[in-house]
Length: 310
Image (cartoon, rainbow, N blue to C red):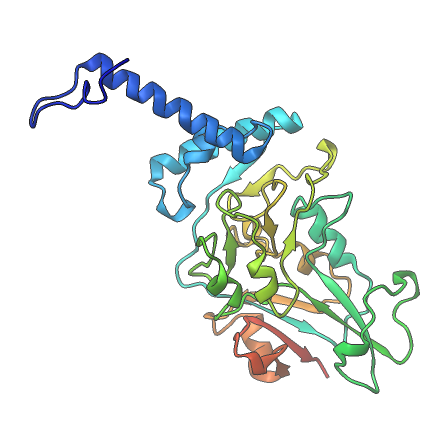
């Protein structure tokens, strides 16, 4: 039996190189074993297991991670999936406004969002909920109907209120995350590092808007439906056991495009832009329309606003 002190060098004396190599091999095997045990199926690579939080990675490490992900997506979907890392633009704070007097409840925004952001198709995860309410009752969440027939809209005597992530200035979901897997970016978008999320769902419990969604099973995303233009912090394909959410289509908006829901809206109900730009449409809405914030009393300070265009 080997003496336990056989590889304990005297102060200042290094271990023989062979013994160092043995330790490295042992540690590498241990890491792989732990990764396999955690996944239960051995799919988690040593590199993925050892990956730090995205905000802690160096530029070189980011490129390595993205290269690995693109390779994995290529093997899984048979397509060249681009994973961008476009940073927040300087002088930009994104804001969103929705005209309740013009929304007809057609739910095109819901399906455009699913298509753009690579959500699971079966079961289908939807980041936008559209609530049908009676005009006489006003914003009455207790009696709102989410499962109305979209073929019969707009119904007389009713109005429609889409709800999604409000991109809060003080997001409670960020406060409760025990591992720092979610945070607010400089342009106001609350993002998630899906590789760092542990699936505890604390963020879901904390969010007062129901904007967080958990993948209970392996997301069903057919290869033919994959949007290959993705962002690491946005619409890249997710895995089982992580929470996902709306990111204001970060893969589009950081390139100067509208979100998918804004682009598809047939009535122009949705307004999106830079809150810091005095000439932007979103600033015009805030300064000239009757605007309110959803659940404003909670002091989450959303960058998502509702208004009546009349």
